[in-house]
Structures are given as structure tokens and as C-alpha cells.
Amino acid sequence: MPHISNLRHYVNGNPLAGPYPAGFEAAVFAMGCFWGAERLFWEAPGVWVTAAGYSGGHVERPSYKQVCTGKTGHAESVLAVFDPAVTNYEALLQLFWENHDPTQGMRQGNDVGPQYRSAVFFGSEEQRKAAQASRELYGRLLAESGHPAVTTELAPLGDFWFAEEYHQQYLAKNPGGYCGLAGTGVKLAEPFHLGS
Image (tube, rainbow, N blue to C red; front, top):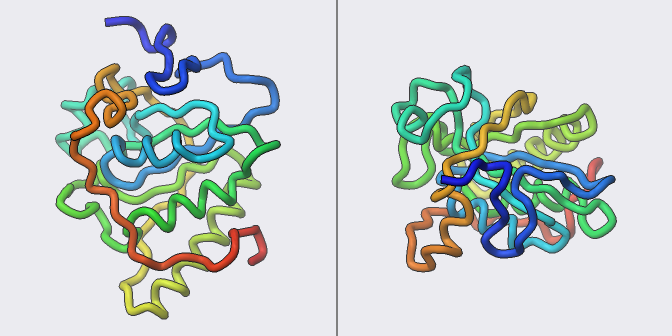
């Protein structure tokens, strides 16, 4: 198997592990199974490359088998490297909140366990503030629509461990593959901006 540093994105050919263009930024989200979540972000305007991986745990270089035990603390996550001249972190947060159910705790649909939890792993103080503001906003909107409280974790990024090659861009390689990604139907009428 090629080392992750040599892999290129199956859809757009960009290097998964970089180097990334100067000035580009990265965001990491967990929203259930990373197959569907990764596709959501690689299809977004301004996203240069995506990768499936593991975040938020305490084991170095975890394998998928280890993460599936629920004992490593990791969540299946997606790295999205984006061009801030084309899109912004707030737009990616909006995709995150509106395309999964952030009220389900340690699961997402039929996928059950801490590895499927909802999480935003922020890489800077600016990202933390935006993530917190968006969580409060969507929390209000979801409550007004009769949904339970938001359970999404907000945490510093720490390490992002790339998942095994076969997980990368899985739904592009396997168009009929499983994707349990589903939103709540709660959406903003306007784009989210910090301070909305």
C-alpha cells in the first residue's frame, strides 16, 4: 500500500497530505461515517482537498479496527483544506450543521458508538469562536424546531491521523457505497457569518 504522503485525491488529484498551497486553511469535522461526510466537503466550492481520518482520541496512529472498538477515543473525521479566497470557515460550518443530526450523542443514524459522534475540531482561536457561535445559533434553531439539545463536541484539533487508503474518497471509488449522512431539515435562510 502506498504511504499516505504519496497518495493523491481520487477525485481531483491533489496531494492528500500536502504540501498545500500557501495561504490555504484547514478544517476538521466529525459527523458520523466519514465516507459521506468527505464527499460533502470535496463537492463544496473552494475546497482544495479532503481526507478521511481519525481525531479526538488518545492512541497514536490508530487503525480503523482499533477505532471501531470505541476505545481509542477517536471520531471518524474529515479534513477539508480550503482556499479562503473562494470560501470560508463559516460556510464549511454551515455545511456541517445542516447535513447531519448534531443531537444524537454517540451515534449518527444506524452508526452507533463514540467514533460516530458529532464534533468540530478547531485549529485556531478564530475557528473556536466561529464554531461556538454556530453551535449556539443552530442549537436555538433546532430547539425551536422541536429537536433535542445539540450534543456536538467542540475541541482543539490535536492530531489528525489519516485513515487507511481504502477509506479515502470511498464513495467516489464505490458509488453505490453506504452513506448514512442525513440532516435534520433545519437550515439558515442566509449564509452563516460570525456574529449572526
